[in-house]
Image (tube, rainbow, N blue to C red; front, side):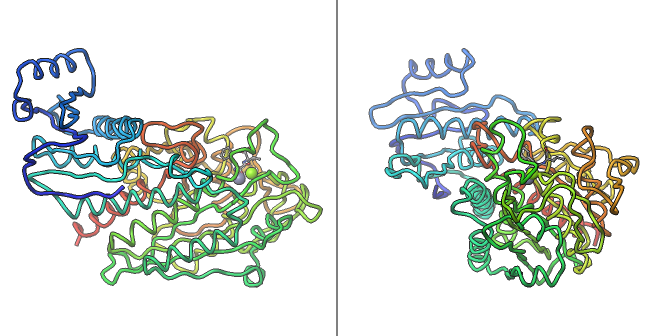
Length: 485
Ligand code: BES
Ligand code: MG
Ligand code: ZN
């Protein structure tokens, strides 16, 4: 959807128009007392939106009564209202909508627009009659007497980044194997001026990334190890921040084939972590945030084949550790582990991995939040929690006590790739810890990144979870550092 911002008072109304405010003076928009009464009565009845059809326009009044400071759940209500109205307009086949910032409240306008834009996503590549299936809403004209052009531009870039993450995630394996994914990442990097490098299978072998190679053994396609790099000349961090994204383009479980009925149906989305990492890179680069940021994306599918790795196999990892594979469905941690130990060469200030890693994380807290653990300072976790509240991509910190390491002991190798039946999200994190020697945050997005139905502006399938979270986090990091100077 294209946004146009006008710093003027709207003179004549035509078409679908949203009058948005916290204390709207209805008289400014309606001349007839009966109409005003009607609108007020709608709000009295508890409706969020009061609609009036004039012969020249349809006016939608949205009146947020609360005058308090915008705390996270109030902010979220406004986004949700924005996404609801997008649904209404799309159902009506409306193509263009005007929004009027009735009380010169740009924060309110921003949140409403955010929800509207995010909710307007549709993955509609695979319909013969694509045009008809796509959302009708294409244009947004915003009238505000206090417009912030650069904030709106920033928002549009963030929304594009979320859509990129959703698009990648939703693309089926038949169109997005590790090579095709790598091509898409290369195109993305070229578009934004980031640098891009991909390690071929031969180079991955030379790097002795035993985890990535083992998971890839049964695949019809070679693995890729993708490196995206963004460097700002006035970066606040000398040592880079590194993102690591799980890029399993399809997860069958391998020989330990997925035991739960229909659970394989969503496993084209098992690269949602990689998709989010790419989206974060895009948002940061397009908005030219002053940071050094790198994304490492190991990619392969996890297939069943005569050549596949099997339970009992012992793998030598990139960092030299030997891992006994007791479940080939615990594949994400194997490819992430190699990427995490590869990250050491950048001497990173902080590494954040994003992965649809465990069903356990999703069972524990559902789609509302990601599970986070790791070795970074408490301050880093607090900042991430704050960002989570701010953008409503919330995180819940799980324990990371060393006792959990016991569960990864193997009889024949350094460690095994599964813990036990308990605390699966934590033991997966503990496994990864063996491959890190820097401050690190692990974000298990198995719950919130994959949705089986639309939830307000979080669309079905890939939700793009993680993009807005980490973008906000890096913005806060920059703020902190600049304040500290
Ligand atoms: N990709 C799955 C985790 C997953 C499950 C993501 C559901 C999204 C929704 C991962 O590779 C996996 O299979 N994990 C196993 C680990 C187990 C074998 C230790 C799991 O969670 O069952
Ligand atoms: Mg698996
Ligand atoms: Zn997986």
